[in-house]
Image 1 (tube, rainbow, N blue to C red):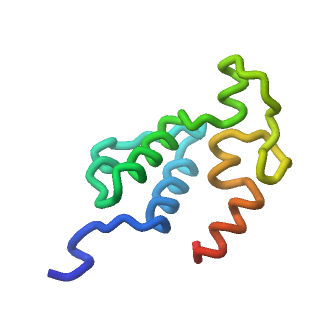
Image 2 (cartoon, rainbow, N blue to C red):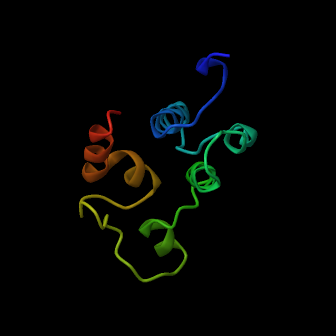
Length: 104
């Protein structure tokens, strides 16, 4: 059996799957077959993180503010832009730097 015959989760593949889903969506919500996430060969915490990203239920500052938490909207990492799901995963300059340094 070759390695290609099995699906192994790596951060790079998770990033590319998330990016493809986000770019294919008009409203930045991700349509996902949840079984694809739950069947990935990865630790449960990675699956749970991917699920939370796709469901837009990460506790970002924008989401917390919408739920009544008194906090600023700006990103805690770069202080440039509103800290929402898209910013935290794809748009933040500090996050982009991290993705570049892991060869994505």
